[in-house]
Length: 236
Image (cartoon, rainbow, N blue to C red; front, top):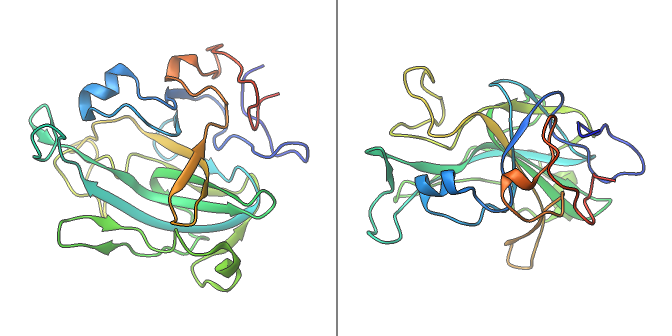
């Protein structure tokens, strides 16, 4: 049965959500979302749930938390990207990143409404061009034990709550998100999930934990069969 996978010794990852969810974006963006920002590559999986649903660590590891947001420019015009006349902001927003020593890989959980109080928050650095650059996310894994903003979390532990931070639409949401009823996001509430390793330059080398590498309708979720990947990290 397609559903959430609990933490088990014979699996690397558990799903980061529990109960009912939808996968609204897969490895490649859907045509619907491409109309908003024009990008093809997503590089992660979006699990949509109601705001403030708990998000769970997919495996044991060292967790850090921060915030990121980039002004999003249209590739053709060079101007700030707009959707329905409003400026579109894109970024992970409030996020948690976990380094998993057992595999020497990372998972990342983005767009959180809020982060668990247990995880220390590293304030982002604001650049002159308006970017908010996260802190601590590229620290060498061997230094995490002594990094004051890192904490060990267990698989299945609550690390944050589903939201839409970093997906702004003519408003700023750091450090506080304005009333979402008056200032809605351009996207629905979800957790953006990635699994990756960083190369020597700190750049992500991602892989799809479902091993599907396609658009969202090809993925399995409760009530939607999708398809099974050949070597998914949590799918048997």
